[in-house]
Image 1 (cartoon, rainbow, N blue to C red):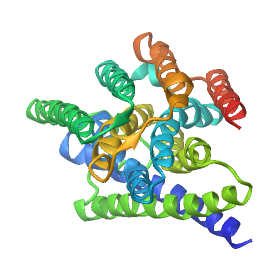
Image 2 (tube, one colour; image 1 turned 180 degrees about the horizontal axis):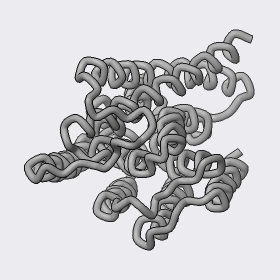
Image 3 (cartoon, rainbow, N blue to C red; image 1 turned 120 degrees about the vertical axis):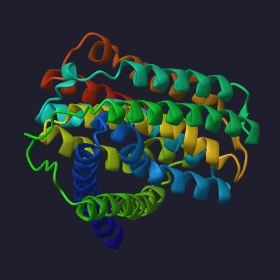
Length: 314
């Protein structure tokens, strides 16, 4: 009974922390003149990817690399199909107002690079250096773009958004961000640890645990953040969060974890799961390049595809 209670408590922490992180990120972008998209690609994305990093390092250290790789691949699939799909079912996402083409292409490029390295049979320290180098270039470009926006005095027209305060004190913004960045990994760890304990009671393999329960559990921060962003009609934060988190998962999580130990690639990943991950990313093309909103109908489609993927795995 206790694992179920702790799992529920972890979920509550995730929802509250996700709300705090969105508030902090949006108001930070208002105060310093940085577009919300760029903030979500850095602060929000790193904060919500922290659970994946902690779990991946722990899994490799405990000689369970299937959980580490399954966590990242499964989380990226869940981020697109579930994290964008489920909030869209209830509130819709006005992605037609967002310009995420450049960052989306970076995410696709990172996905292709990740798959290419996976065909080497394992992720080694050399693979990690390659992934982290690409991430460094992406962060440099994001920082340069942020500096350009500040230099030109550009800012997002978010002053009329509910609970967005362009004059919010920096200390309060810091409290929101701290609560989010600390609460998200704590809540995710609490939920995933207990969910994994429940799953192993039923004899589920480590790889399947990584692709399903752990992946869904560590995607809950993104789901919480995206849900709150959808309610606040912040589609740029929602979409930017998913794109940024996926890039961090592929480049930073696996990149850093390879220095803890080598990560062998199960042949099943090469045959099926990596291509599902890439296919899920390609589904975003209409919303990124053709200014389509992720309507409730699309939300149902995306969520349904994820349910089908879970059915095939289990």
